[in-house]
Image (cartoon, rainbow, N blue to C red; front, top):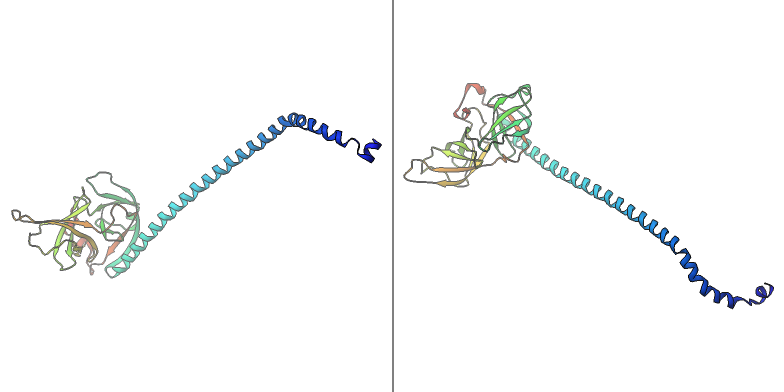
Length: 266
C-alpha cells in the first residue's frame, strides 16, 4: 500500500481491471436504471396527459366564452337598433318597451311568437311590435306575464302600407310559406316598381305611420287577370330577432279601440 501510495505501482493493474469490472457494474445496475427511467417516463407521460386535458378544457371554455361574446355583441347591436328605431319615430310614440321572444310556433303555415311581456306590463290586443329593421307584427293574445304576437307574414295578417316613393297605398297580406308579403288588389298599371320601399301608412290606428315594412322583390302582370302579383320581402329579420319593441303609438289623441282597421282581422 505504501508503494502504491508513493509510486502508484498498481495504477496500471487498476486501469486494466476497470475495463473488465465497469461493464459488469453496468449490467448489474441496468435493471435499476431501467426502472428509474420507466418511472420517470411514466410520470412525465401522465403529467403531459393531464396538462393536455387541462389545456383542452380551457380551450373549450374560451371557445364557449367567445361564442357567448359574439352572441352578446349581436344582441347589443340589435338592442341599439331597437332604441335607434324608437328614437327615430319618438314623435309618433307615447311609450316603448323591449321584450324578448320566448318561443316560436313550429307550424310552417303559421307565424306566431310568444314574448315575455303581458297584461302586467300594460300590453294590449292589437299592439304593434317592431324590430330594428322594421315592423314585425301585432299582439293577438295576452297573458299576465306573456303574450302571443302574429307576424306580418302570417296568412291571417294584413297591414296597410304605402310606397315610400310616391305614397301609393296598398294592403300587404302575409305569405307564411316563403315568409313574405303580397300586395293585394293592385291593378296591372299600378305605379309600383321592384325595390320600392313600403312603409306603414298609419291608417287603421294599429301601426304608426312611416315604419319600414318591406321591399318589392317581384312583380308579375297578366292582362287576362285584373290584378298584378306583387311580392314583398319584409325588412325586419323575422327569423333572427331575439328582442322586439312593443310600442304605444300616439294617433293624435285617438284611442286604438276607436279606429279599427282591416289589418286587425286575425
